[in-house]
Figure: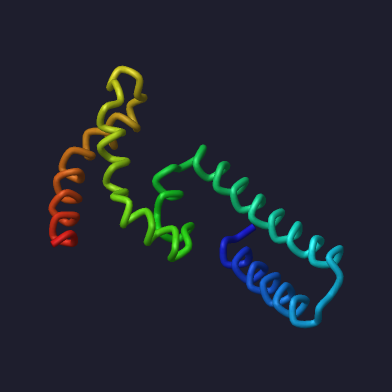
Length: 122
């Protein structure tokens, strides 16, 4: 499922829930709508888990996060560059050749991210 499609479906579910609340539907119908919404989020987290296994850097990019998630992560002190710092502590002997070449490019990228983070923080 594409993320854009997931967001469209979420908006539809929110509108259905709002309509149901205004129409004073029964508790059973409300429960079904809420469970459908929870199931929809479960699908999103399942998709994120699959994406994390294949490319964690793509997952940590802003596209997958809601604006509220990005806001709270930033306020909480998380910066995507933190992933680079964590990955820089991986033992080089455990990497294959392609990964090793990417690994060697992380150092300058960490420096650049640090400069950008500093300029955004002040």
